[in-house]
Length: 44
Image (tube, rainbow, N blue to C red):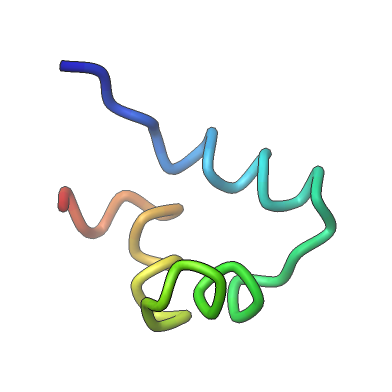
């Protein structure tokens, strides 16, 4: 199984010039969830 790291998520998000909130809305999750992914606080 392959995993995408928080660092990768952040780099791709910034490359697309999206805020955490904008990405969260596209994925129908909260901006806090995106933040947790990027900082590695959440493993899911």
